[in-house]
Image (tube, rainbow, N blue to C red; front, top):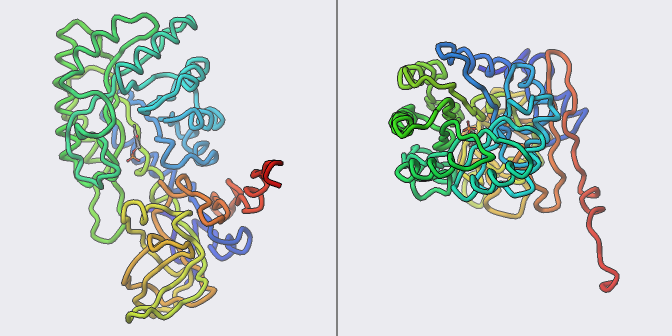
Length: 420
Ligand SMILES: *Cc1c(COP(=O)(O)O)cnc(C)c1O
């Protein structure tokens, strides 16, 4: 469920008509709904109500906007961060350092030191080498860092290859068969408090089966580690729940996920941790765009050229992803068209031969389900501006990320004297 609906023939975000935002901010622009974010945060929390005090850490990479993080902080969410930049954002949004989990396969020395200084609650270690470095740095700083070892359970998540992270040949975590020996060596180091394991097998998962398979493997590993004498108090089950991008998509319901987790982890006797991203933010945002013009194709289908492009919303170009496209003020007629942006790449295609609302030059339209992995992946390719973001709350809205104009980006570039 989300709060982007037609009211009297005009698409609204909550109570704000989208043309009002387009007039105020211009297009393209991401529009987020606070009520939708809060609802999803609540639904996910409720789904886990059968567990004892689960730790909820929003995966910041899905939507790192400061105001979005603030909304989730007020919902009691911590953060899962994968860079120093994301850590700074989570802290700036008011999340407690203690509630922040630092994941990522390539934490730099500088990032580890900064995270130790900030008092980050947990490091999810992705290799023995990283664990060794963390332990040494923490030890010299007089810290003892909480850490869990990320396990690669070698499970096929059944999702797009580029967002699959739990197969043996993916770069993430340590192989489950090597985990006990690596865990034992890390556990012997000063400066580090090994307290459990983590996994995250991929994103946009549309079935619970691979998750259950992976969790069962982790349960076995927890028992094995315990019988080797380790104290396991935390298991981080990652994120990955899919969302509905198009009609017919049937992602798992959070409640069914919660029930599966409760069943599989019964008796583990640990604090479970979760890192949801897309399931919280995906349907809470749309990309608002204006049609530049409609040009006849040399085939039989016209090209609807919109002012949003692959630099603003990269998912179709990266993952062949589908985003529903709707006119803001539909006239009731339909059109079959290819939807493309202005960027000079054929990859800048949002949809081919799509049955859409009839649109003409100047009309507003949206791409739905753009609240996760949308603005956060934006670039300035083709010297386009960096797309702005707006947060709606009831009948009010605010710009929560300004458009960075091409001129601002140009001003940060310099021609050396010797080239003048
Ligand atoms: C990306 C990521 C997540 C969030 O994934 P979603 O599919 O958005 O829920 C969680 N944990 C880690 C380690 C990640 O890399």
